[in-house]
Length: 309
Image 1 (spheres, rainbow, N blue to C red):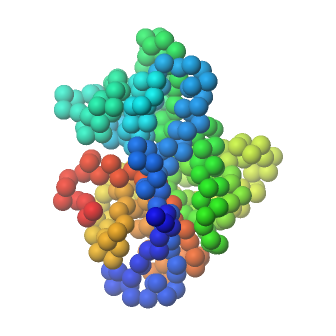
Image 2: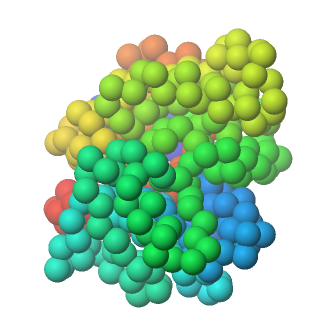
Image 3: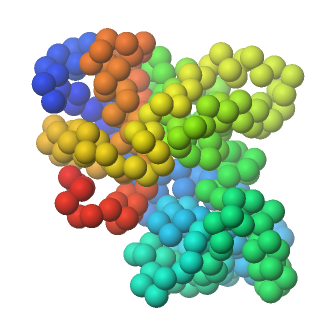
């Protein structure tokens, strides 16, 4: 099974994009059945740290459809640690499919007020849970932090070892952890990062700082800034928004690429932005590797008629 696949760009009336551009997809969604895409790579070093701490529990935060919480609970099913998940908002009697899976994998769920949740690991709810459980290791939201980024740097190195020459790699950003890890890797050429969140222009600074911290080059931020092109206008209305123009685009994409599925929150919006730039002739790279970061279970948060896959 090859993990690098060429994308057919000729759809929605564009008949010659394949002649002008090459866009390949790294199929991270096919990696690691329990934590596909970037999820396992962000968790890997955190799980090692929890084991070194002899933790009995591993806690983290996320929304009711969180790919990260889903992956964490699944990854711990066959381990000694138990997942403790702090979920944004009230827990409803009818749990989301994501949380149902988490409970089936043995996770315990805790609700959190939205205002409290914004504080992350500094939230009062985290302190209360820490007092309740003996020896709990906390993973930042989304598998973030330096350990999460280090796992993604390792992932970028692995991708570089099997991929050919590209003028750029393209990837989505939520917390920015994966982007920072990739940016820190010498295997990654020019990095095009597309934020899935609205109003996150400052995230570029955070990604550069974390990448520099990973390789202890805090005194040379310009080196990383020069290798990064950050897009803060690809969110299509905000995080997890699925406008009709994206649905139409994905339906046409699926017809042209029947053996590829994209998630609704991250990689689909990266492709939407790149494809439209290619169609306008403004995409600066003739050969690009786009990274599929998984998250297919996220489709369960949308109506069935909205997904073309």
